[in-house]
Length: 71
Image (cartoon, rainbow, N blue to C red):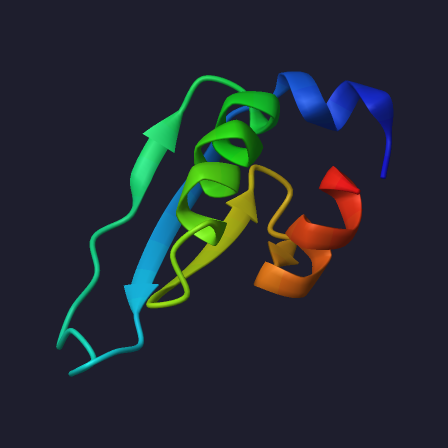
């Protein structure tokens, strides 16, 4: 991923996995991908939440991608 992509807007959607999955999850818009990743990091602390990010370029970043990036 380009360093420039980290400064572009991104959408974060957090899906709930337990005890009952949410019917709809609304994405939140972040000014930068960095901010979306930071918010996703907080969600990863809860095993019932699965954060997914869609970048301005249309890339879909899974919870595993986010974990790997943070480590």
